[in-house]
Image (cartoon, rainbow, N blue to C red):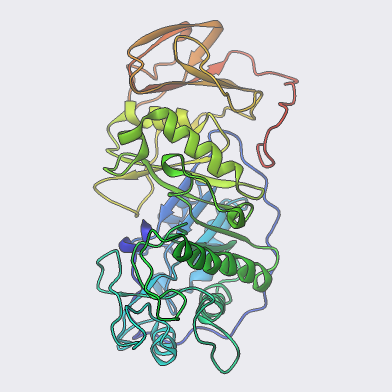
Length: 443
């Protein structure tokens, strides 16, 4: 969960600029494969630095950190966003938000006005009807849990907690930064992580209680619905890393609720589904989650690891390429800051000429074809495999792992267990057959 890695900055900052007029999102053209996404929500927030902007602009979809009054390098965040878009006009930039926990003390916080409102309206999650004992955040970050559902008391304007929170983020995050392409909501769970009086009726529900699930889900459904109304023409994405996890079904209200989101740490963490349940379970989750999104289906396939472990990166990237998502690599030592770049990201596979595969292609190895090349992935547990390519292809020429990316012409390749590779065609396909059933936004 990105939540416990990004906290809002100090409030010893000037108030945000006057509300800007909402601007419609510019047209987005899905990029060529491989599609690259990024999560850069952690400090230092050097978004105004020209070199950093150039790195960020290599990504097609990214989530950046923000807090009210943030002025990276002394300039407005909106100016930094415009700087990135000046380099890559097609880049989509989202600002991080969360609605599930907050500090209780407004002193020195950029979120002071939000904290004051939650305190005054008693919008915390409580463990009894006395509204006296708040429940610490599941993330153990010093905050308390917000009851971010529609079942909280309404203020003088008729807003419950999630209505107010949505309007607050739109006013304090988006309106000062109208060139952002939308907001990113962290922790869009289907089930609470803590027990509490979710309906404010004196009934303390366990986190596994279906009634608690329904309350939380109603809150997130309201967030996305209202955010769309208040930000016409913009996309709304979230942390969808727990959707379809372990084969679970998705609540009906979550279908088509988001325009995209981050499948956080699909590979590389102790809680990664690939690690404890295997490659096929990971892919089932990835495919199902992407399928539940609205167009343009901005699914970010996030992997953690060492930037020098090229085989693991190729494995993750090739897995991502089996569908239409955006690949994001996070360095375990750096976390959600900086841009990690690999030779494979510079390859131009063009557009997909085949639909996402539903079965292995050869010897347990999976393949997907593109106009300018192919991607192969050998799942964990399949052992080392040598496959015949059915034609002549060219390995990309790189510097990071020259034993693999050496520019050689090949008709077969050997893949280690838990490995992948990108290969280029000698002659790009001129008129690829339009794949049937390919999701909107697939290029």
